[in-house]
Each structure stands twice: as C-alpha cells, then as structure tokens.
Image (cartoon, rainbow, N blue to C red):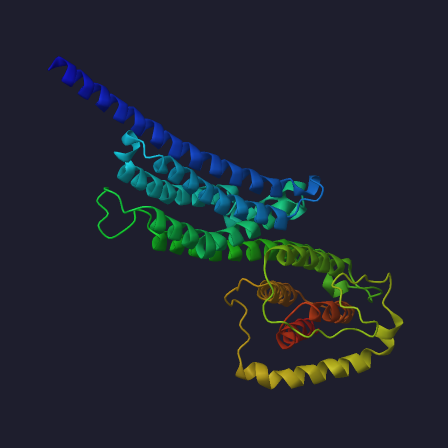
Amino acid sequence: MDEVLQESSLSDHSLEAAKVSVKSYVNTAFSYLMQDISDSLLNVLKRDGVEGHSLEAALDASTKILLQGGRNFLQDVRKILDDELEILNKLRELISDWVQEGFQDFFKQLQLKFQSFSGRNDLAHIQNHSFVEGSQGDKAFPGLVLVLAQLYAFVDRTAIPQINEELASSFSPGVGGYEHGLCFVSRETSRKFRSASESFLHMYVKMRTQRISHLLKKRFTTPNWVKHKEPREVHMFVDLFLQELKDMGNEVKEILPHGTQKHHRVDSNGSSNLSLSRSNSIPDEILSRSNTQKGRSQQLFETHLAKLFKQKVEIFTKVEYTQESVIMTMVKLCLKSLQEFVRLQTFNRSGYQQIQVDIQFLRTPLKEIVEDEATMDFLLDEVGKLSYP
C-alpha cells in the first residue's frame, strides 16, 4: 500500500513539474518573439546612422519575425505532442489551452508594446517637442509611427487569420471551459488592431502636418507684411515646405502601396520631381508672363469652380492605406493651414505680390504628387484671394 501511494505521489509531482516546464516554455517562446520584434522596430530610430537600413526593411523584418515566429512555435509544440510521451499526453488538452491563451496574451502585449514606442502620442506634447526642430531621433519618429500603422494592419489582415487557421487545424478547444471554440478570440483582437492601425495612420498625418504648420507659423508671424518690400525671389519657406513634403513622400512610398494611378502633368523638360529648386531671384518668365499665368489661373479657377460648388471640398476625409490618399490628405491640410495663417495677416501690395509668386511656384511641384488637382488649385487660389490688400 505504501509503495502504491509513493508511486502515485511521484506521478503527481512529475505531472506538476511537467505543467510548470511546458507553461514556462510557452511564456518564454512568446517573450523571445516579442523581443525580436522590438529589436527590429528600434532600428527605425537608428536608421539614419545605419547604412542601408530603411523603414521598408524594418517593416519587412517585423512582419517576417511575427508570422514565421508564430509558425515555428506551433511546429515545435506539435513536435513535442507527436512524441506521444505519456506524461505529455495527459497534458495535451491543457497545452492546447495554454498555446491559445499564449497567443491571446501575446497580441495584447504586442499592442501595448507598439503603443509604448509611440509614447509621445499626446498631440500637445508632439506639438511642443523638439522634433519640430529636427533632431535626428525625432526625424525618425514619424516614420516609426507609419511603420507601426502598417504593422497593425498586417496583424489584422494577415497574421491573425493565418495563425487562427493553424490553431484551428492543430488543436482542439481544450478543457478550459471554452464551449464555443478556441480560447484565442481572433475577431475581437483583429478589431482592436484595425482600430489602432487607423489611429496611427492619422497620427502620422497629424505629426507631419504639425511640422509644416510650425514652419508656416514662423514664416507668417515674423515679417511685417504691411511694410513688405517688393518681392525679388521665391521665399525660402517654399523650399522648406517642399522638402517636408518630399520627406513625407519618401516615407509613404517605402511603406504604403499605390492606390488609383494618376496621370501627372509634366513640364516641358518632362520633369515630374517634387524637389524643384528655386532660383535666387524671381525668374524673368514669371514676371514677363505674369498676366498670362494670371489668366490661366483664373481660367482654371472658373473651370473647377462649378464642380467644387457641387462637390464640397472636404479637408478632413478618411485616410486610406495608399500613397495617394496620405499625400493628398497632407497637402490639403497644409494648404488649409496656409490659408489660415494668411487670413490672420494684413498685406500691402508688395506682400500680396510675394504671396502670388510663392503660390505660383508651388503649383507645378504639387500637381505632380496630388491625385486631385482641382482641389489643390482651389485651395491655392483661396490663399491668393485672402492675401489681397
């Protein structure tokens, strides 16, 4: 009798030890997976100092680690169960629950980790933070937010459905009291990641827009527009404005797919680059053909006006996961901000002429990147009208 009790006690101890070991293995596997994803994202903040590293590389690495890491973990668990060890067979249903609960908790922790990377997501803090002055780490931060937005979308659209499919084919619901299926509640998890993805994409647009808004504020609050001298060159803020849009465009092209293609109009040299350089003085052709350009501008305005009265110009529209949508949204918000800064100033005739020169110079490069030229022309024309003395 004592021998039977001793064997029973030993068996119970072995079972408990096996439970602890398997559960520890599951927790450790997910911990390592989380750390690998974190390391790949941290490289975004160092990308200016890492040759060849890019936002696209960080996104690709993170998605591969996430998907392949989850698959490798499931394969390892299946191999353990396929060994048909008696003690593990007794734990088979519990292991099924632990694995599914592990994935559930992993995605919760992953969302918290992504949020921690955007710890400066308070918009007031963003506006006042030094990143508007262009420190190296902060230059990378908007790009990191864009990568996180796309990672959220990847988890929602690809990772969760594939992992859920493999879980359903590999494991039974287990014994944890989940009568209606797997412990891993994929639908609710997907909804949270989808919502977070949309929020982060809007956050990226706001960060980039605020950066340009800060530039515009400095431009329009510094000079005395009532005493402005006759313009001799396109103002430097135009170059800075275009450079910010170019930086944003480069990030967007790395991460987001194309949407509806747009047939861009190009200049006589076939150029369609955003990074046009201004000359040190106002080009002769701008001065000599000002009346012609003004006529064309008026013609464009009249052409699009009827359409725009019928179709309200919506500034705060939903941002889609395409290059064109993000760029167009950015341009609309920035031009609306430009309108507001101009509206708050009083201009003499020379100040008015300076604004006309600047917005005329902006037209061509902006037309090469926006999908809705009519809206862009209308917003620029409004800037010109608001600056009239």
